[in-house]
Image (cartoon, rainbow, N blue to C red; front, side, top):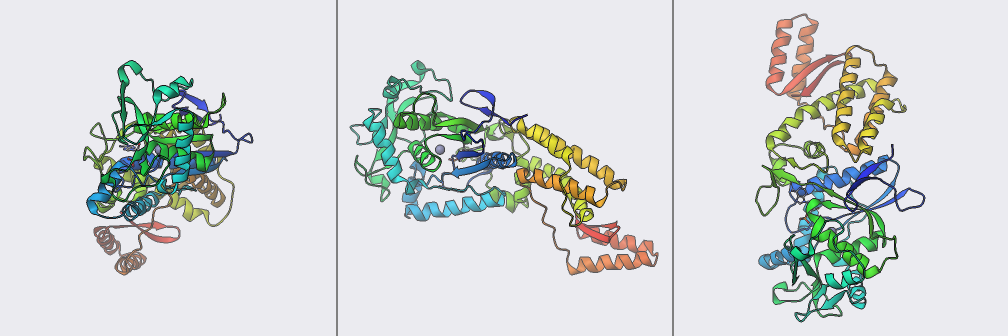
Length: 471
Ligand code: AMP
Ligand code: ZN
């Protein structure tokens, strides 16, 4: 089976065929963070989903150019820059760095390009100029430049491709200057916002006077600059479908006047929200955890990534601390199995065992069906454990099984558990237990084992001698 992915544009699961006639290169744009604060793990659910897709495309042999923008100028940012009496760059630089540190902790692969909106003013202005020249954008009496939905539709273009719109009920006839506005309103939206006193020093020159871009046009300009006028994949969380992504289509297709059959983006994908007690995790509801909140509670980035990879990207799922803690056991089971394979496999280089890879690929080809993929992984863990217990695995077989897991993990991106170093005290106790066992003083060796347990370590006797591990 070929890779099938749901496309929000056609509302169907489709075979994924890149625009590249050779079928190899894939351009993928993901709406990135608005750097006005620490991101929460709801935001990261979307970024882990985009990382999963990128890794799976690479696993399937595609050459992916992954672009993720940094929204570093927008209403909320400007407000905070004014409140904190700082500069735009200083303020956004801090949160951009924090975001990328969290992104790395969650073991997401860095995109090849991380364009900042503030570094794309010429491209933004040029796109707006094209829209003005085609009569689709206009400068209003307030000095700002707006996108005219009516004019756009008058050119034979469709506004309302990602979502079905009821124009009679939704058209409010007003324009909106705000970056975030009611999802229920179809309104002319700002492309270039005239400078106002509250903007302070945040403004750029333009043919329409000093001002700054609207949020939607930033993404159209950065996406087309880095991936060309037409590219394969555009991703984001489900809340971005409308108006943000709808407006991106309208701006790009309006400005660039595509010939029939050519599109701004071939395939749109949206990740469902992470919920807390049934409600979207969000800053405004206050029901959120940042990554650092969870790290401070003793969870690792890898455990959080594992949890975020558990549910299908189109299924909403509820986050709870208990749920996160509960996932530890399944990760430990996997780590244990992989650790034992590693011990047995030695350094031999062998081709991967095919069974796991076949089941994993079948599941992931089906619109990234991670539930089925995890089921295949845990069935494989049971089987490997059974073969290990029965001493049925030779060194090359263990190496082949390990290699299969390594390939799967290039997609899941969990990496191996960091083995905590045992302290000198723990090592001395292990030695003492060994000596007691040698002298057949089993009472003493049991006492030492209990002492180790009290320190949080378990000891296992393997063919290569005793092995301690954290419990
Ligand atoms: P922002 O920094 O607000 O622009 O959001 C960055 C990304 O996080 C966007 O793709 C949003 O759609 C996504 N997002 C926001 N809240 C959630 C959530 N609770 N669950 C999943 N994704 C989210
Ligand atoms: Zn965007």
